[in-house]
Each structure stands twice: as structure tokens, then as C-alpha cells.
Length: 451
Image 1 (cartoon, one colour):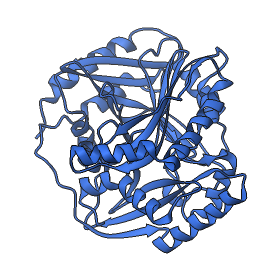
Image 2 (cartoon, rainbow, N blue to C red):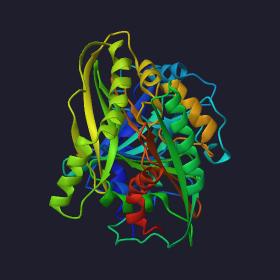
Image 3 (cartoon, helix red, strand yellow):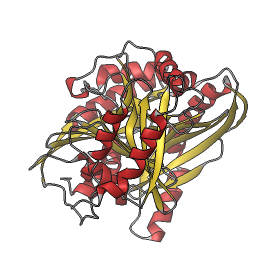
């Protein structure tokens, strides 16, 4: 059942007409109207399945937004530069696009060939949603965005009239999972870890993050937004995201790790590594936390991430509060060591500089980074695609990116869940395999997946 569309879209139709009567220079146009509180994810699920869709929620619960359609798209191949990406977005955002944001992401490694499954995503793809729903207090904000001179008022109003505003729905259940395939297999994983440890023992490589792709089959086609909705209970203190570049495949995830947040010249970064599961009770949970904090191997693994981020930020910041302090971040299924960085960037540093310097961090690549990424290219039997890449948004004077871990690719009736583990001196293959299972347990719990 649908709520009264005229009452909900009347305001946006009015401001579209009003804005079109004004004469302004070229650039992004954004108009907004306040509507009664509307469940953001349910609204996004209700829109036509063939539409471009994006969803983003920060880990602090302050920013949640859904977008449908494309007011603009910036897309590039593996050979297109990060500089060209940000130059295009910066030029279009301009001085008046105060609230407009592009949402999207990019591949973990744009130097290697893309698997066909990731073809619709490109080397990078960022979307300015045509229609955007967000929350403000007890109300919701419905926005429409377009490039001036690219669309007519009648076209935009027709699109607004086609939006669906669903009535509150009862809980929907995802289809039943019927199979599981790991790539690499357990035997292949053991061989990869042994080979990585041999490289570490030879010197020159301190850490490499090896990943696994676990593909689950289902009895019926998956709705990626229903999967994401099911994940929300398992995604405390995580960024939640979904990117649907076209009807068909979707990239979803719930990541605890911030790559960076920039507000003006200020930048915040995280260094997360080292893992323990959660205990069934408070006493066991504290014991596992103490084991994590006291583990020389886990602290060494996390320190490579701290070192890598520190080295990257030191050349770009006039002041930097170092990430030497160590804490434990507790998620629903596991817990990690974390350090934070807080810096003030030089005026000459832009988001292209930050992404090139910070991605991939040693948390998802290794240390030294370039060597570790070459090892990953040679030894992983699948294309990571957007897994472990930067995922987030870019605005006029700010940007935020999560590291797209704890993520999966939805294709028809399959979900491929990705997880990685840092291999350092002292790593044990079986323990790292179990860590991979911890890291996809939010999917397993939410969707009742085979173990």
C-alpha cells in the first residue's frame, strides 16, 4: 500500500517549478522539501528495481541518506586518474551546491583487470542522486538534484510523481541459503598463507592481507536492500552502504573502518587491525579483550597500519595528533584494536592526494604497501573489485570514506561475502581461517547462512 503521493511530492513539485523560473549559471541545482517521517531504507526498496540506487549511513548514527536515479554520474575506467575524478566533481559542485554530495566508490586495485561481475561498477563510479531522502529530527527531507540545462521542469516533475512512498511494512524474510563455496578453499588458503609467511621470513615484506571470497547460493533472487536491512541489527558502530549501479548487481556492506573524514582542512583517520571474537558473557568478553590487547602478534599487525597511515599523513598535515594510543572497538560479532589520527591538512592537499596516499592502508593491503599489493595480485584467485576499496561521499567542502570491508556482491540469487586477514610473522593458517569466519559472521547471522 502506498501513502498519499500528492501530499508527499507536492512540495518538491512546487520548488522545482520555482527554481526553473530563476536564471542562474550552470551547475548543480538542489531543491528540498520537508515531508513526514519516512523510513529511508523502506522508501529506497520501494523504488523500481531498474533504477540506480545508493544508501549510506555513518557509524555514529548522524547521517543516513538514500538516493534513487542519477542527476549526474562521474565514472572512470581503471586507466582514468583519481585526479580526473575529483576535478570533475569539484567543477560541478561549485560554490552554490552547499548540500549536494556525490556517493560512490572505487576498486581496491585499479592496476589489474576487472572481472565481468564488477563491470557495471567501473574503476570508479560516483552518483549525484536525482532524488534523495534523508532525516532531520522527526521529519524527512526529500531533495531533487539536476545539472542546470540538462533536464526540463516537466521531466523532473514526472519523475517526482513516479516516486513510491510505501506504508510501514511488516518484516520481510530473505530467501533460504542453499550452498556455500570458498575461494580459495581451505587447502588453497593454507598454501597461500604458507607462501606469504615464506616471503615475510625472507625480509622486505612485514605484512600482507590475504582475502577470501565466500559465495552463498539462495533458493530465489536476492533483494540487496532487504539483505542490508537484515544486516542492520548486526552492524553496530559500522558504516552501512549499498550501491546499485544499474538493475542487477549490488555492492553492500557494514564496515567499522573509516579511511578518512575531511571537514574543511581537518582530517580524521582510523587504524584498525587485530581481531578477537566476542564472548558470550561479560567475563569472557573482557578476557578476550585482554588477550587482544596483550597479544604481541596482534599489536604488531596493528602497528603496521599505524605506521603506514602516519607516514602518509605526515607529509600532508601541518599538525597531526598521532595514533599511538590504543583502544578496542567492540562490534556485535568481533572486536579490534584501533588507533585514531586527527590532523590539519596543508591548503594544497585535496581529496585526490588523500586517496592516493591513504588507500590501500596496511589494514587491507599490507606493509610495505606496494610490495604487499603485488603479492595479492599474484596469489589471490579472484578479483576484489570494490571490496576493501574506498566507499563514501564527496561534497563541496567535505568528504568521508569508509574502507569497504565486511562487504559483499549480490548477483541474482548469490551473495559473495569478502573477508581478509593480516599475515605477519607468527600467523597460523587455521587461526586466520577462523578469523575470516568471524568477519563474515554478520552476514551469516543476519541471513542464516551455512557455516
